[in-house]
Amino acid sequence: MEWQPEAEKKLSRSPSFIRKKIRTMVEAEASSQGALLVTVKHLLDCREKFFAKQKTSRESLPGYSLETCLGSDGCPNNLIDDYQLIEQLETLLASRDLPTFFRKKVTGPPKFHHQFSIVIAGCPNACSRPQIADLGIIGVSQPRISEEACSGCGICVENCPDQAITLGKDGLSPTLSTPPCLSCGRCIVVCPTETIIESTRGFRLLVGGKLGRHPQLGQELPGIYSARETLTMAKKCLDIFQQHNQYGERFGEVLKHLEPTNLLPIK
Image (cartoon, rainbow, N blue to C red):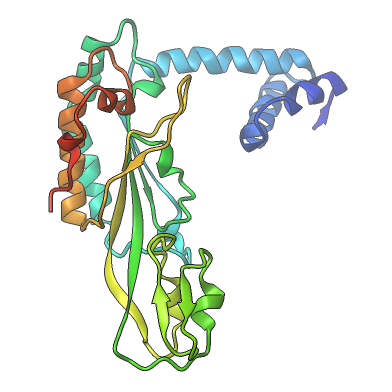
């Protein structure tokens, strides 16, 4: 569909990652009005309908959001084997009756940013942006050096995106450095002699991430957690959030007023 130059210019000012979606919505609005040319009026009409729909949607918000990356759809970097954890987290969030909780804490209808967010990434690439969630969960595969002899091929060094592997002077003694190793598992996959093997597979956990007026990245908890331990930590995070929340503020704000010992690892 053809666009009026002024309308195209206005669209270009929207964030690039949602521009395509906005274009589709506006063209649908123009078509519904029988127009062949998209004008600024169609943009404004579409925006008005969008905000009206948001207002209605806020009244039925579930009080939480649970998002995952596309790892389960065949991503070669995916490190999550058992997706039962996602169903367990969904059940946990639904059991907390967060809509009622927010109605008691927030003045007026709760908004999307009030919801408690859990974001799962299948690998340290973290495409789903767990760093800005109330609880971010990242699938990892921690490597270790086995007793198998190294051939000195150097393929592990070449494939490590974080320069976390070095070979000794003899070229046959790999060393792993943590940090900068993020446990992405690439070295494990490519090692032909199984000199580098998997030590632990599980999850890294980030707490308190958020955007908004005072953005911050989630703080990483030390260690790697199993699915069972991750679910337990999710319960603990929700307990702290609901017990200490004052006015619907994000989890990161709640944590600022608490002692760090409240979130020590549970292992």
